[in-house]
Image (tube, rainbow, N blue to C red; front, top):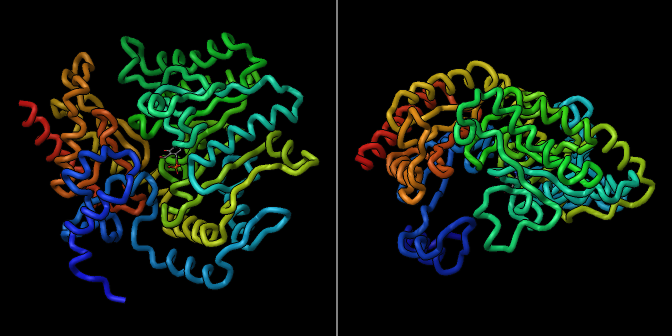
Amino acid sequence: MTASPVRNSTAALQAADARHHLHPFTDHAGLAAKGARVVTRAEGVRLWDSEGKSLLDGMSGLWCVNVGYGRADLAEVAKRQLLELPYYNTFFQTTHPPVVALSEKLASIAPAGMDLVTFAGSGSEANDSIAKLVRYFWNLQGKPRKKTIISRNYAYHGVTMQAASLSGLTAMHPQFDLPLPGVVHVEAPYWYAHGGDLSPDEFGLKAARAVERKILELGPETVGAFIGEPIQGAGGVIIPPATYWPEIMRICRQYDVLVIADEVICGFGRTGNWFGSQTFGIQPDFMTMAKGLTSGYIPMAGIMMGGRVAETFRSAGEEIVHGFTYSGHPVAAAVAVRNIEIMEEESLVAKAGGEIGAYFQDQLRGLADHRLVGEVRGVGMIAAIELVEHKPSRAFFDPKRNVGTQCRNHCFANGLVMRACRDVMVLAPPLSISKTEIDELVGLAAQCIELTARDLG
Ligand code: PLP
């Protein structure tokens, strides 16, 4: 079948897209006027659009293409699995070799004690499932009042009713009459924006103790779980001070509150260990994983459990009435296993926590001298560049000026994908990026920050 060249012209694709496709997180009036960017292929760390323009993808898609684009290996594994067993479910005491292999593999790389996994199709579904499993756990424990989940401002946990409720980015709530009852939010460990005169370590303790205050206010007998991304990604790559997570662990253990680590971004090497929990000393009861699990080549998410949570479900003695048609899809599972093997064979996690991660962070720190840059922060292969109006006082721009969006637009125009979360420019390139490509990325970022500064006068 040959596609008509006219039908494939950028203008024709944009017109049909604007007419028939409702995009996620998109202003459609703006889209119809301008036309969507049409991305047609990718290789390594680079994307190409329908006009042949190339872009260095500093975001691994949406923080997910950890092994980089164009892995023929993953396509071959998927093809083989599609021919052998394209689909079968894991309901009603059924399994298949790819899902067994993946479950075993995940248990071998997860934090100690996490050895039970169930699957979903997306990070949102996985967090939604965890919220149900938290309820079920406490019901089985005979503590049916222990149900509230504490989350944080700036959190991003997805878009289903429950996951959007858990999210703390306030724009996600009013359009949909959220959050649902049973979710509360406390302050985030965002020192640069909210730390004031406190040192990062002092502020880390203060932010963690906001969780303790909330538990005591609600009554520990009503609080079922705390959920947090080890590093808050979409909220602006908020790196918690070193004091934060140990104090969260103390508090949650003291009041018997389950800890959910949302590893959708931090998982699979991003922070230099397999999971952000390992980087930050978190001992979670539940872990959410997606994105890097398959490097985004095919949708899949996992919910990992350990300790008494895993034991409680293993010995529930009744059918657990939960699961998706695509839980543990064989093609996705086969791709996930091979994806993890590629990471192992190429030492991508060790490189993110070692030479490549250190190089990426060092080179980016060089941008901190620019007058628009208040702070450069990051761990491993995730980083943020905070654009500010006045460095000494850490004063932000008026959000209406859309400084981050201006910078992001300069990036697109000059061949770099760097995302703006408010005026925080964020980066999470494939873990397979080379030092030469990091030089190119940092050079483009510097150029686009300077262009933004010139616009501002
Ligand atoms: N949790 C975190 C930390 C995320 O960053 C995301 C997506 O960006 C999600 C959950 C939701 O995942 P999905 O978009 O696959 O539903």
